[in-house]
Image (cartoon, rainbow, N blue to C red; front, side, top):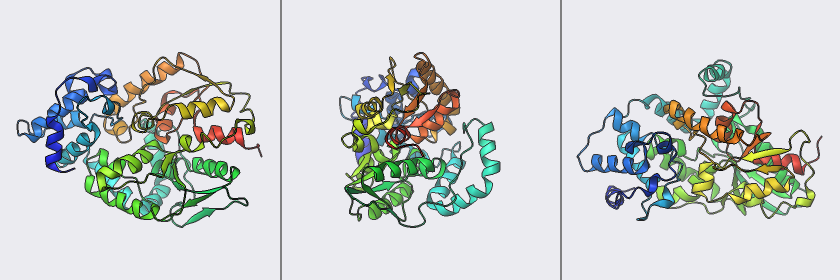
Length: 392
């Protein structure tokens, strides 16, 4: 974002407060600086020279979850998320609190193969440590190989179509079985699946920390790799990856990929309910958790629910669907606030006593599993696979 455009966007704010209506951080801490309007005012003060960077100012700007709930509420059309991204880029040199998080995130996204090897070596020490700190609710099982090392094509005998898979960092490292589930479902439906070599992080973790330059490099690399593929769709199991590539790359590098889509949008008209068998008799009811980036960023709410109901699961509805408080690096740098958001979210679900929680975001799975310890937290693709495929 150019500085002139950034200042123009900031100047459009009329301080109406509409952006605070669904702000999860403002809902938890109703002080002006923890809402979108307050953050915009702080960034205007910073850019106009009225304010200087400080630990307090930095914390307020970095306390936004970037959920996007405010984006469609601004009457003057300010792109609030992009404003926050740019503001964090301006503040990153003075933001000492998150400096080590930046170093780790930057290293892991720029050197994924080396990071995977280091993680594999240290996992028996690192994962238990993260579990004790409350940052991981379970000990992940890493896959034996880094799946992005080579081109992989999963063929079918009677090909109905061809799609590519954008694995995403969280799925690739912590939930590799979700990728296997997706490939199984696609093959059952007659779709050849391509996993191209060279895929890198979508860049969202870098942007949340203000590291715009490196995010731009990764975006250009992904665009170069996936735009060459002859596929009808590029599927992602992570709404943040989908939103970044489809909607935020055009703002970041001038071009996105329209073929990138969430699995629920892709499968909604391709899954014949008559092919579903009943899911496990032990599970009779569930609640669906809306990932913020899927709901607010991509506008997808009905499709996952319709698919879940078609599998035979009794889908319960809550009075309100809250942000779980994960938001990537937010759950690390704003741990207390993240935990409070999670507590409220899970408490709302437990009121209706579901037997499981279903979502479509690996990050939300990590977060929800911290509190819903006696309830399985599943990704939608797991539910589809169990209902569609015969048990071995």
